[in-house]
Length: 271
Length: 238
Image (cartoon, rainbow over all chains, first blue to last red; front, side):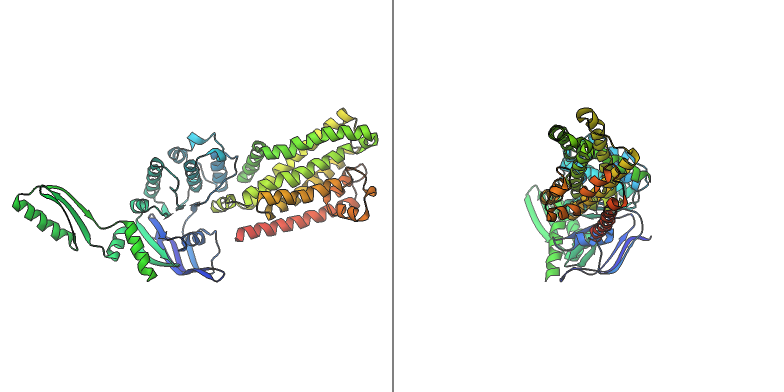
């Protein structure tokens, strides 16, 4: 399948400060791809270069499809109403308005309000609707759930999954690790203008080399231990407990959080 | 085209919702017209022959230099322009729609002045209406083009308020609408000639529609279009 986005040797400096140092990146069509990085790692610059909002010094950016972009810091004229903005953007993109998408994002509920009267969450939903109004193939979402309550966040996650099921490619930038873990097919970690990791969350865990941590609760009490080989360890442990007639009440296997792995990768890259 | 026309119609609605534009394009110029028109024609009855043109210069200067630029700063000094750019709406849309909408608003204010002045103050109507309206349209366009430069060049509202006054006040005080320019010292007369208000005022007077009154306005407009183009290009490349 053709990649939705291909980036080769992307370089960008602001004066003497080098932000991107020959960055390479391939984003597959139909995947949810997340760009992670500490503040100043070059995430926004990378996204803006791909989106065509920022000029880069050298390199190649190939985007195969129509883009829809939700920026992290977005704004609209104070007195515009949500449906007016949606209509304006749809007309410019010569696209039909997707009323079911607007329904899902709750735009109809706020259609009488002016932009200045909307809450942070309502503004986020509106900007997502605007990003989708041109019926794009590739959707860039920069911190899409920042400022949203739990309900709003979950509903937006559902919307993002729905877009993926429609074959859209989604490029996400987020600091919310739970969100990244829940949504992403692949993750790229950016450090000092270079990609230091690109792969699935599982591959990230493998790369960090974290051992499995097993928490087991039996009739005789609680126990926690580490292992490299989870399959064999669990089989022999459960066999032994069964043999001794000890009942197992709960088992939890943990390999650390995505956040811990991200910090570990960033730390290794710094070294 | 439909996106552009919708943009113009939408901007018209947004301007009506915006109280600041209502104040600068309608309320203040019309209150000024009612008060000063009454005073002028009582103290100096001969001003009846130029009252309409004087009040129009005041109204257009206020709308173009104080009313239009804040709307432009709201769009071009903020993330609105980025949202437009990111979603396929061209950067020039904001400028052109605001310009056209402000043109219509100012034209309406001028028509109100034109209709009320003879009734309220026995002001003389222009002799040649087509020439008058053409002169008025040219003057509004030139004034708005200067307002557009202000809105694109200044990045925050506080600075804008100050700079807009530097264009607005000399336009009013030195254009000849408050008192005849021959009463001014030479250097103030020269400064007054730099602002389009004095040229627009003369252009709108009876028999004033002549090349000697129009060339400077055309020059200012051409320069303003180039400057706005450069400023928009600069915004885009950022």
